[in-house]
Length: 338
Image (cartoon, rainbow, N blue to C red; front, side, top):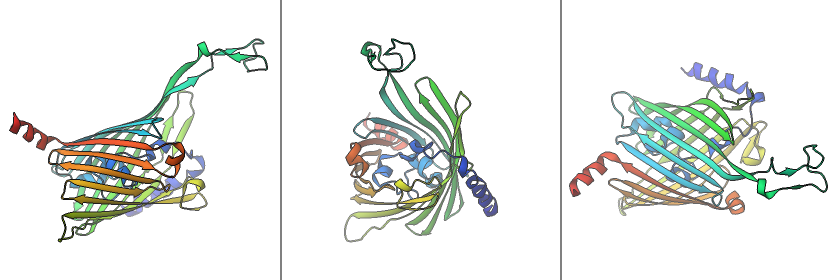
């Protein structure tokens, strides 16, 4: 198995020269208000409803039927991101989840039919102008449907995979593609987890109607998380770390780069007070600051996050809100009060 995985990685890396540097950028924004408020340092400890994205292996530890809806307004509302997920508890050998997220920009101006072209050459020449009455608008979106499954190999080791169907839409043009992620999660000590995800294992392809295509190259995310509960105070402390390794040569978006290899570091901290109030902060792989607040109940949680500093200071802050429900417990609560 180990040799096969190395061969897969090696085969994928040989395709680097043919990849598109930013083809899969929308897939790197993240999902899950909790996970995003931790700066994405969530590979070793995502919620089950966000595991299909961050690390599908986490699903093998899931014990409840849960669902999540998230809405974010990125960069002062320029981008809108919605996420919907359901995670099934582990039964027999496998656990599953299904999720969907969509990133959309609306109101893009289309001036192609607005040119008053006196000489008919199709260009805006001196003395010619655009007719505002002929301006049109269109939208652009990028979305992915994720199906994940996981199983425990032994009491300490889980593995999982995520199958992705990807769509890019620009006006009336659509591109489709498929991809696959592999994840692993290992418990080193009680409360201490390490994990890794190999994204787009075989290189993800996007096909356009005109015959052109884009490639999303493999990338690797590693992370660790621990949980500590001091006995003298009603507090749980959960620090987490992450490390992204890409092969796209993004020298202006990395903490460290060597040729076409670049990497970024993530860090997050979550404090759970009396098992009800959760305070979060994190630093993502681009150095941006994220903060968040969560309220945990027996039937679910309500979460809020704010991204600020760095690129968010220039382009506008991002606000995120999410609702997670535990359906069985919610059903019991409803029956109790009816």
